[in-house]
Amino acid sequence: MKAKDFAISLSVVGGLCVAGLCRYIYYGSLTRNCTYTENRLPVPEELTKGEIVVAKDAYLAVGIEREYACLKTFGSIDREIVAPEAIDYATLGRHYFTDRGLTVESLKKGAAFRIVDVVVLTEHGISAFESSISVYYLVLKDKNNVLYQVSTSSLGFNKESLFLSFVDSSSSTNTASMELMSIDSFDTTYTGENSLKYTGKLIELTGAYLESTEPQWKTMADRLERGETFTMMVAIELRDFNGREIELSDNPEERSRQVAQIQDEFIEKIPSDLILKDLEKDRAWPYVYMEANLDLLNYLVDRRFRLKIESISELTRLP
Image 1 (cartoon, one colour):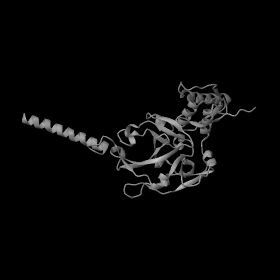
Image 2 (cartoon, rainbow, N blue to C red; image 1 turned 30 degrees about the vertical axis):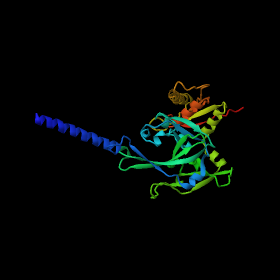
Image 3 (cartoon, rainbow, N blue to C red; image 1 turned 90 degrees about the vertical axis):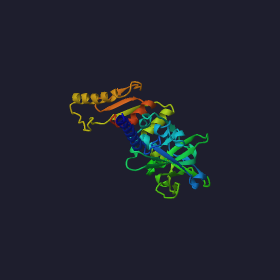
Image 4 (cartoon, rainbow, N blue to C red; image 1 turned 90 degrees about the horizontal axis):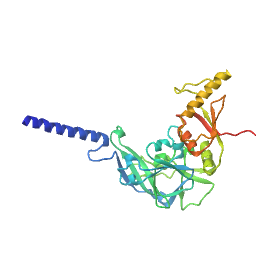
């Protein structure tokens, strides 16, 4: 019996050790129930003297991400400011957020915020691979005291991707141009104790330039939101699912059959709850025409790569 009891005790201890090891591998800790840790940092003094203003229409991902819900501060902020470039990116789009249970809303140009906090999140455990990964977030508050978060890494790398401006309350207002924040506005490699360094680097851009960097589908979406009606044309790529180019036949009948097959495969992938009103198909080229609506446009834009869409544009009919 003593031998049996010893074996049982050894088995229990072994199980606990294995469980502890698995927990440490997953969370990076034996006591923490979260793969992330958060650390609140002081707001750089220069940024307390002004506002963050949306200079180009952006988006909000609304909801609490499951992996952040265990965090005391960050886990209570349910609005993430998303760069327009992320929504326009063919392999991301809205579904990157909606697939994780979040909803995506518009954040219009001119919305203003105060920076009230800085939070650095550090990922631990197996998901962080060989080393802990830290991401810096600005915590913003609007005029209704609603909190938002945006990572410094999503502020943009080049002129085309910038969308948030910093307006210093002590400076004179220039309505023709704005000073845009970028990833270079902050130094996350700064070794100062418990702080985030603001470099003060801003890029001056005109409103006309920012508007010119918006994709064509965004202009179409704005018009639909204003209640306009028009026909849009979807051009489907001439390639199969293996990426090989499809060569259309010179024979009119065979060409028409090829084009119809490409169009039908595209249409079959559109969910039945999305309206395809006044649907028309070109006989000679893989073009599909339909009355534009916002839900359909958003779906097509978010899944351009999967649906093999070459372009989406307004159909201009000749008189």
